[in-house]
Amino acid sequence: MLVSLKELMQDAEEKGYAVGAFNAVSFESLRAIIAAAEETGKGVILNHAEVHFPLMPLEVIAPVMVDMAKKAKVPVCVHLDHGQSLETCMKAIQLGFTSVMLDVSGEDYEENVKQTALMCRLAHSVGVTVEAELGHIFQSDIGVGEAGEQETLDSFESAEDVYTDPDLAKDFVERTGVDALAIAFGTAHGVYKIKPKLDLDRIKMIKEKINVPFVMHGGSGLTKEEFQTSIRNGIRKINYYTYMALAGGKAIKDFIESKGEGENVFYHDIPGIAMEAMKENVKEAINIFSLEV
Image (cartoon, rainbow, N blue to C red; front, side):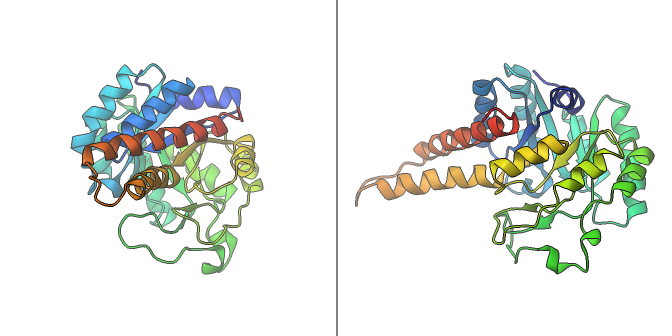
């Protein structure tokens, strides 16, 4: 069933778990996520990030995402991830998304507040929830575009230049009315080349100031214990994509390498192989986020 992010977050907050938000960059990944959610019996968030529009245009995948969410046996939120403009977010809403993220974290603080507050007024008027980001999520190899060196804390003058400030987070939420806040505490987008330095206590520090669901971006590569400590400290939504995509890629690679010399490889076999591997990886993540393993 199609639901808003607010509905999923309310249940997660009450029961103390996190909902997985998985990027659907193709029909195969979309089917894998829905199948994993139904097999585990857990609600899920279908993400589509603006950075992935060149791989799968929003107007192509959106109707399928919304339709599959409506037909799913579990609650499903359809969410725009890292929308870069009000226009993109509004387009997603018009296409049926029940949640959007406007990411203005790269701008100065007051501009972030201004644009996020406007986005909230527009989205809330039609029953759509809004996520924003405050702080800086480190970047690494995400497999899209050019991959640079992984950012680390050493790339900045101090932790306070990177991690979310609790007092600023309180001010931001009060002035914008945002429904969920992505906070920075040391995680990194993409494949970790260097283990990041996590400040898991910062989640609790921010939680003492404000009572909105917190979102973890860049969680791929964390241990089960790190994920679950983050959840117990207040994380309620976890964006997860990189290692799901790697699982699909590895399954295809293994399949091709298993073929003997001269054997044919048919493309129509490839999507199903990737889909099954991604489904199993997503199921494992959902179970970890639910604190059930």
